[in-house]
Image (cartoon, rainbow over all chains, first blue to last red):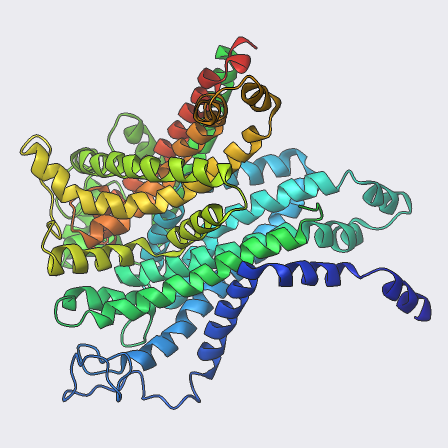
Length: 289
Length: 314
């Protein structure tokens, strides 16, 4: 233990270097702040002093932003701010869970294809190419349509549509890593394949996957908003930014604020994940710039 | 070169076959009987049986698949359950609308994305570069359907400059057609411009540090000539390839853009088909876009060869 500690003081740990590089990256920090902010309001939604997002008030229909309703009210008198905050939950959940699905399916398949090669690689790769040939959103729309409209099904549809990206990325990484000396030595000392994969291959393949996952969360949030906008995602009366925009487009003339805030929020949270992903890419890149 | 392309086409065939299996399986895996939609209120078993025979739904699934693929190869993608029109005919009707939208968007994307990319690479590390990057990243982060809604609010509702929705065929009234499509094309184009700008920037960065650019400068050529003639020409190859690959983004973006501006194109067809549970149409569209994407990939490869004389002679 003491030996390890002395070495850490002598040489900065790689994690520290990454963190330092990341912190000096201003736009990445901005991304981090944006993402943290939205996660915080999504988590705090139940305890924040805001009205019930589903509570209608026919006496206050389509009211412009005021002291009582900071972001105004919608077509049936619901508080837009409250629906925005609860809508953050749907968006973030959709982003994280669908990418979780894509990573959980894509990474193992990519490792198998890249490490073992041969016919199993051929099968996985051809399927990946076939799935990649269908545009992401078209595939997600078709899947969501066949599964039926709901937030859960939208997440599954987006997750499956994003899977081929992770298969291809992981496969490429593994093909490069498996010829490294340390993998060969692991073979030489007779480590079982399972351990080689989990101890040597996976950790080294992880950084680009992490970057891709962050960027894909951004894409997934837009995809969820798009599906909800089309009526294939979150169903009313549950709030979601996409479905709020869908209603808002019918009241553009009378209540433009209904369209303004959900769009800005999608933009900010997606920008946050994009900045974070770009920053992570720079920070995790072992080559100096 | 020919053998390379033949090999590429040969690889594309199993991919297309796999896509057709996915698309076919999609319908078979779905819960619910599409016939019930078709039969409507009428749940008379005899009617259902008749329809089942008519659409050959009593055949074993592999036989159904082979029939479907066989028909698809002859240009028959089945019949829409809703409108009773052949799917191929429906797609044929809607496609020109979307192609007009796509071409106009690409023009916007190229006009904005490429100059911005060149400028930002040339001024790397300066404020201009920084701003261009922020704008591009914002372009990627703005949901384009929201941008569409906001533009309608400003341009059509407030200023009343351009129509908010609709479509006029080019053959009917050329200028009105262009005018109606201007806003949708801009919305779709900006998203692509952002991607294009980032690609152009990185391609230019690679080229600007090369020896021949230094030589061109040493010869005393004007900066304008160095950047546009020597550097950009060489950066063009990857840019052209990537532009072809934007096809997928274009089609997907068209779905939402057409929905917002109520343009009766390919994208609106998808959404309507999805809501009407018109599965034959959904299947046909996914198949056609996927095949289109593969063809665009092949064309991109070909362009790569044609633009690069070194590869051409090899």
